[in-house]
Length: 593
DNA sequence: ATAGGGTTAG
Image (cartoon, rainbow, N blue to C red; front, side):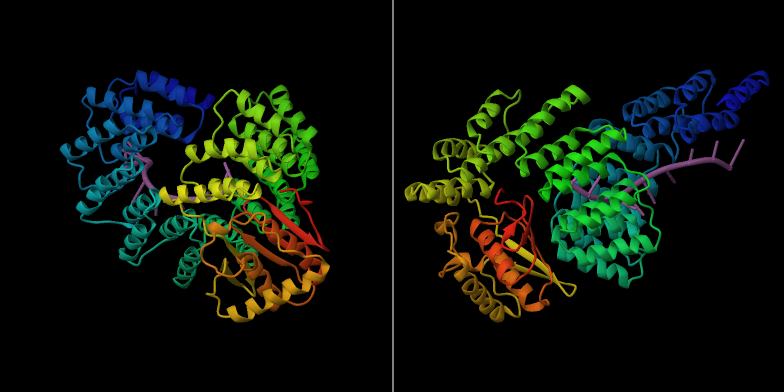
């Protein structure tokens, strides 16, 4: 910087201020290549008598890079006022600014300038337009620009694919992907893979990934991160390990996002030790790695360890953020650490100046509610400074179900299904609360309301990975090639645990809501099918890992405990909320979930 | 003569 200033003074002495080539280099040096000199760049800019397009573009880019898109747009209009003609490099920049600033009107106007000034056929500019319209959710406009292009490159296709994917039209995105020329790079492959991952279509993401490998496209860190999420979604530890291994062997740089994806994958695939190992091995631990690890401990019910890790984080002077506290409070909630939870809820503001957000109140309602302090939890929902949203009330409703509080449950449940009418889980909880109290008429009414509103119960499914193959089961499903053997094994399993005290527990079941089956649907919940296949396919003593999309029901939970004892197996089940480690007839959640 | 567009977590 000091040298730059000297250099600058030389320029002034030599009377080169009017030389735009020289001044352009000066402005570029402080505007975009070094981070903190934009102020100086602007000072220099003000002294230049007649800046050219390059200099304007460079100042604009400086603003864009520093996340000041509004200023970038203002410089553009200044440029027009000074009658400096934009060039090929102007529009990608200012359109990017409109995009970042969500400046729809300006964006359209600048699109008009593009056409008027004769840049309508410039590829990079057209691509920027597509990207901008995609961001504005103007897919038709984006498509129009795309269709008008004479020469589309891989960026044009990627932007359009992303556009469809971003706004939920995954199948449309795939159509575009299939239509594009075969010269596909990692970026466009990642766009389509990420599209499937984000819509929870993990199997299809895997098939695409296989195709990508067949075409010898390099697996870069972006694809790796997307595929790790796919593994996480499916609970597919083996595949996840493979990706992790690939990353290590190929020296792919671990940025904080990729590190988080790996740690999260191991946590959510039930391999907490490995997650810790990766976490400990990071040479740089960003806040998200800490948060992720604390969250991992939380979902495995290791509240004390989560608190210890938090303390270590403070000792290492890493300032926690609001997510840290969401995870820490969740850890307390899942481990019955009521006093600790209260303490950290206060501490968050007192020690770190973080004001509680609605998520933190949600954690506290969950913490108190689960622990049976329903009245206090309810009081908190009334007294919190913002309106309790569906997740806060959902926590309270869940607590009402656990502690069989009909009155409060009915009140909250009714409120909730009006607040969040499309969420089938709320209806099911409310109906379960009624069923528990023997109020069958009300159960029927809830069901009718669901039907009237066209709300479908989310189908439960469980996944077990065996010999590298991901097996997926739905309740009562018979799609598996070995369905017959599996069902026989389920019967054997349930008979086997009966002498050890297994009594089918129908408390949580909504007979009226289960439609597919005539026999007892409990027996064929997806996790029982997955467990049966696991017992059939693995050697004695091997751990079974199962993940399911909904919460484990009480009956399956009880059955799993007994199966772990009778068959001498560790069974690790991931449900929607947390992990259950079944071992010797006990569960790590201590029946607290 | 200097510069520009598309991708990853929770």
